[in-house]
Image 1 (cartoon, rainbow, N blue to C red):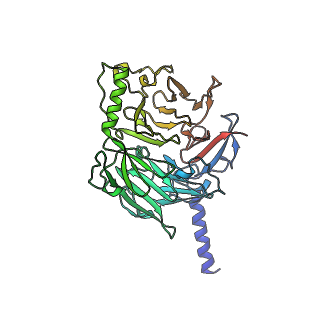
Image 2: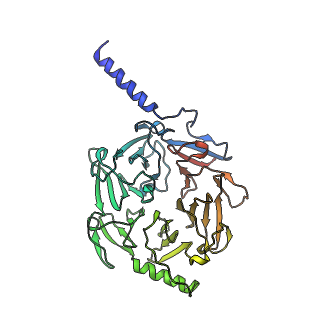
Image 3: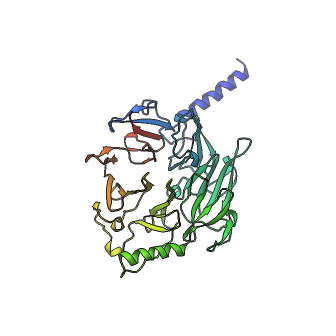
Length: 406
């Protein structure tokens, strides 16, 4: 037997063993699509990553790749309303608990940047390091993408992961390491800006939004930065709300982009939504630059703390330790409460329960019964549910899609 043959056998054997590390059998997650017993009328697709997060990361065929727990996924802005399929040009980027960034494209998923090391090192993707992209609380800062460029808000800095002409990936810090403060009416370049607040969003035109000094700034694709709304305008708009609703109450002081779990969403209606474990827990900045609080912004002595839902003003409802924030196609905010474990939708004059303790359920408008949907799934603009769901799938390391059967 030749040395070349022996060497090839050893390499193939090691590769096969690596793929098997931490991966589950096909019986646990069948090939897509498959019916879901706990959700009649829906079907599931196992999109990427094997169940199990032990062993070293392994790229390759999407459903057999081995990564860590997946706290966040991001579609490129131009693909936000399109579903991933192995034969399409749609891409999906993931961050995992091991501080790695992955690319899912055409049926394969590979790590493109990051390592187990904790740090802020820029450079070639495999040698770069991150602080917050995968650890608890890190995904709250945000990850967005456009084309083959990914932006991660990491420890008050904006990090860019970009594919090079030779196919390699390069990580660079593009904002947050400077010293400049952006004053009202100013414009600046990204690299001049000092530490950023929490939260990151991108719109279909490639504009990036993030908090800075208590307001929100917009970075155009060419890198120029300008104010979407300043901290002074935020407080002035909140003062107007209080004068109308509670004229005798003092206006609370707050800073956009502070707190824990801050998330931003650039909605296709042109408004920028924000929320999380902060005050107020949900708000938006309109296309014309007005700040509008949405949930839980009443004076503290008027907030409802007994967790009731139904008809009423969302201003009076206080989410408890929000763990997830999203916006429906109609522009309504949904928030995942930690205690009690429930997801609620906040409309203009009503708060509706979508999920409730132990059911991981979705409550359709025409039904009084909860359908069992795994906690951890988020609904896309097209009504499809995607996420790294535990519950009936028993894993946070696999990316699953749920949609109604045709």
